[in-house]
Length: 354
Image (cartoon, rainbow, N blue to C red; front, side):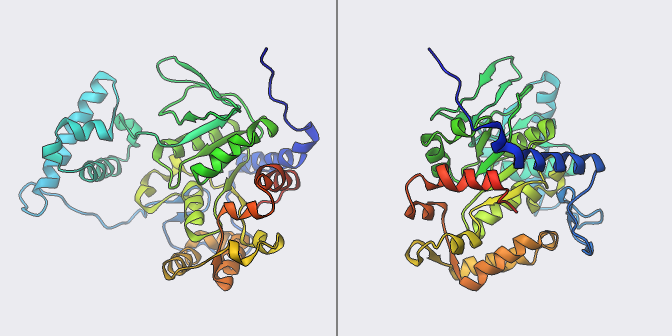
């Protein structure tokens, strides 16, 4: 006989429910997250959407009569003809499929990826509107049921088995919150510790590092559909923070599609640099910042959206001053299951996010 997973008592979610109510009120007002007294800067950043293209931006001409760009011109024409056939037949192809149709002509996968991004940007059409998909690398688990385009019904579970992130979904069920986990190893550990079952109803997603397009689209659709709180669990290092910023504010390379991919209401749940001090994580569990880490951290601190996140800025400055970083696994010094049984539940119950 199968039993439904037993989650926490309803009172456990009181803080989350209040947070969701504030998010819904913000959505209704159409407000962003600009703090009082903040001044907008002339940049690619819009606090309610994320990184965007400037209306007046530098353009690049690709010509058929120029030796420097003739190959690029030919590749774009070739891919445009393939896109036309895909749309006419209402079929889809991955970028990898397109590359293998004529690998000798394209030369490498990067040439195809670049051309497709140029076409999407030029036509101002999302990649999916061109009927071009990316191969998913992300995983999802928890209280989620959806239907794929072909009518296949998929039931995600709270067990130790995750489901690959779909390329498109038509219907979903509700949950109390969504947790984005930076790394696959941490995601798998939470599954092994039955975190989803004990925190049910919830959804957990990982992009296995820098998220692919499908993972970002799924997270965006979950937010647009349910407006449930979305939290990130990343390493307390510049690259974990960079990944969180991609989900929240987008990336420069995909700024023309920011409105389809970003969730400015995402909150940073952990691992916070202040948690390292608060939990007295021993120094031998920490890692010194490399010169490259310090450059990345300085770069993030200079970004326009940090102006709108004073608490984030404080945490980043704390990391810069300490010149140390920590992986999520550093929490195992307390106990092997401290992350799933104590750290995350306490933060979700008490509102320990920023």
